[in-house]
Length: 347
Ligand code: CP3
Image (tube, rainbow, N blue to C red; front, top):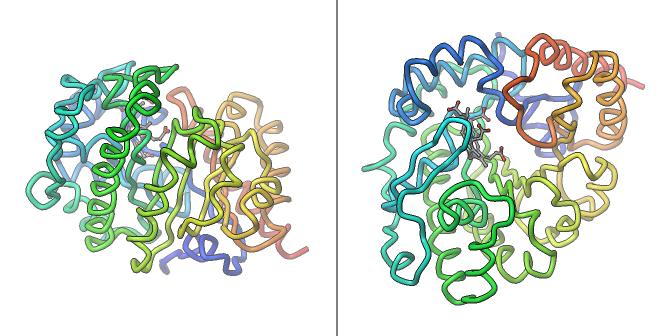
């Protein structure tokens, strides 16, 4: 089979004959085969076995027929190299055993050493580079989103400790953003050198901030990350996570190619708010997948009709797949996006 580069072309605003599709969190618990592997190994144990991690990355590509693979890993993996002791706990998420709360905690963070501490991730990428017939997306968590875990110590709804440090000790906050920014830059550069064909920066929780605070406390680091990685010849995606619609107009200066949208802002509005500069990706509400397939298709149609109006659109969800997502509906949705968008592009 010929290499399918539809996803790359769409990211770069080039013409495509049908829309590319992939799903955030496409490797995961909705798949019984994955759940079986998880009975034996934890996420972190799987990541330490490159052959197995590569196999799990490939599963949704074959089962769902998507146009891109996303590396099986987690946004927390690289922080181990900074000296953070964490675990991914079932039904909770990342839990940090030594949360960051003080100046000395931040000063203690080591620079990332990818070759020493994360060679298993690079090996997984190299294996996939040889096996895949679609592009491999690698990823990193963005500094705010990673900081929220490091500071709170576990998933949070209010981000009270994170905001307390950010508003109360802005110099310390900037120091932390600087260190996490360095981590992301170094880590992603290694990914591309090992065979990654695109990367996405997940800022899943930054929608918790007001636009002016985002501009003061987060955007300078995001801008620096994309500027320092500009020389890498791969599409670069920034996903500002859930409830980020109000932040979109602040993003017009970053050197990314694609902006991920959640479902609260339409594709057209997302394009408008980002000044038409970027390709856009998204944004079906993942929970629409609980509805009958006819309803799912109606929602997808509306998104596709907007998406195909200009080059530069990648079909995806507005956030990650959930464990109960029905695999048959995902397969049917993928086929539908391909077939319907091909007709829509011809029109
Ligand atoms: O997308 C993929 O299929 C690739 C793998 C991937 C995982 N995590 C594996 C994983 C990716 C891209 C991530 C990113 C990630 N991790 C994000 C950003 C995306 C988003 O949803 O906003 C965030 C915030 C995390 C942190 C994290 N990891 C949480 C909050 C949780 C627990 C909550 C949950 O959804 O289960 C995890 C655990 C995790 N990471 C799982 C998987 C498949 C589920 C548990 C497991 O199978 O061990």
